Length: 151
Picture 1 (spheres, rainbow, N blue to C red):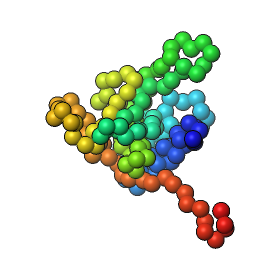
Picture 2 (tube, rainbow, N blue to C red):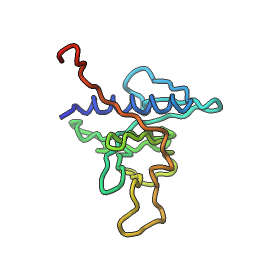
Picture 3 (cartoon, helix red, strand yellow):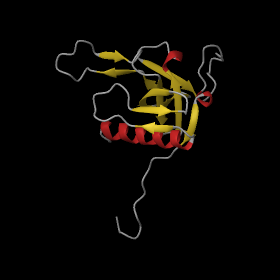
Picture 4 (cartoon, rainbow, N blue to C red):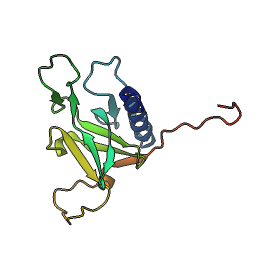
């Protein structure tokens, strides 16, 4: 099982690669204590992006829209939302290889959000966020062993 930090690093790498391919300038803040992972420049404005790993569940990409502090010894709050501190989520889903750029203003939930990859089984069509509407690009973040090195 991968360490959560490694999963997060691969997600950030995938988001950076997809954004650069789409023509964004990407800046990475110095240090670990910012509420955002990247700053993007589209030529006219700067936006703060928090990278999240999405997981494919029942035809939708599900991702967290808050930070968890449950692992701290005495947290003031178990979760902390990003409203007012970021502009967008950069979501990478390893199962679809998709990178999605989602404005936080479009996410009413404090804890989770989802992007539909397949139509809802119950036929619901209203208030559905379709993954393709937010797709920036597809990136496969994997490494294959070098056959010549014997690894």
